Image 1 (cartoon, one colour):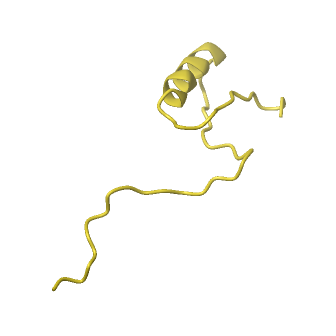
Image 2 (spheres, one colour; image 1 turned 180 degrees about the vertical axis):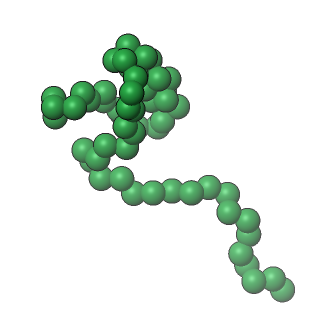
Length: 55
C-alpha cells in the first residue's frame, strides 16, 4: 500500500475580514479600478476597492 498522500490539488488560506489582499501601485485610478474589477470577478468572495487614506 502507498502512503495515502496524493498530489496537491489546491491551496487554501484563511483571510480575516477587512484584510487588504491586493495593493496596486503606480497606476492611475481608472486603470487600477478596471484591473481590480477583472480580478474580483474571479474571486468567490465580495470585494471592495479602497483608496489610501479613505479607510
